[in-house]
Length: 487
Image (tube, rainbow, N blue to C red; front, side, top):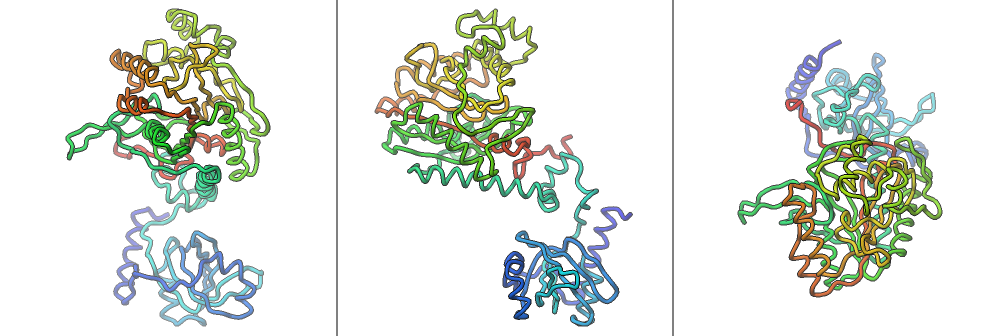
């Protein structure tokens, strides 16, 4: 079997022969007059009328038989068989195809639609033309890309050769398009907010840092989809907004974590907490039904059904029940000891990090769908206080298959309270907590001008990956992959 370099050298020779014969292997345009899918859908009429068609696409397979050849032509919309013979082409054309074309080449094929004796829809070629010479062989169907990192590095080949990967790409596009249509139908305004920020807000995560030379200013890539910016728009009198955008977090990788991903956040003035729950439930159900055609899913060893009403779980009570500690009443020493007994690793030696680590341990057993409610104030610095218990907040998270798949707040609009919460986060940062939320004092000033009661919610690629039963990297078009020379 020839090596990759031997194949490449042979194809480079063919490239030179094409040029010697006056054939441009990379012409600037094609005379294609329709897509392959259009030919397939109107095939009977085209075959009957013997109308000439001109197609363009990539050669995916070739089967030669002396003075004739069959090829599979693929243009991204469909695949059709091409039939070339010495009888129908000039001798020079046919020999050029036989000698100089390869699987992977992009070509133009002109001819008539006809059914073969086996009843296969085909194009009987009257001419062909090279559109783009391929210098490397495509991976074989059964013996091609196998290494997971190589698949991620060469995702363009994976999508080309793997129908499932292409289907995931198309479903993901439909997923975010469905979300956009959901919000547009309910009067939300799509907005774009900064991805470079002086202070990161809206989440607790380690940000990426960069520098603007023109301002001589250090800035951060955002860790949320403009939460504090969208809430400024609530103060500006825009009643409902949403944004679909990229988020960046300088954190570890896992099947459900990536350093760059797409999220959705929406905010609605005057929407109360229960209305927000109903809207989120309907949103998830619509995404599931329109993208996957079902409300029942299985992933990560869990099964869940999005239909009907969802469970409601209390943050403090589920930790009591599962881990045997009270995160509101027990001492930090007790929480730390219990985490050690459970073998739970965590970063940061403060009550917030220990509380969050205990919850993450407990959530693994929850299949959902469920609304997790009544988060302690310490882990929800942007939420309104719960009137029933001032130690808790009006927050909920959607829990599916043991993971957090969306987070909501009855957004805090009391500037004095927000200032105090930011001051607590500032203390954590000074104590070395890299994930504590950066205070945004300009946002507090905006709140002092007045901000309406607001409901906010965020979700994203993780939800899609759970519905598709794939890891987060598997559903990303071009996930970050470590270069070979860095391994």
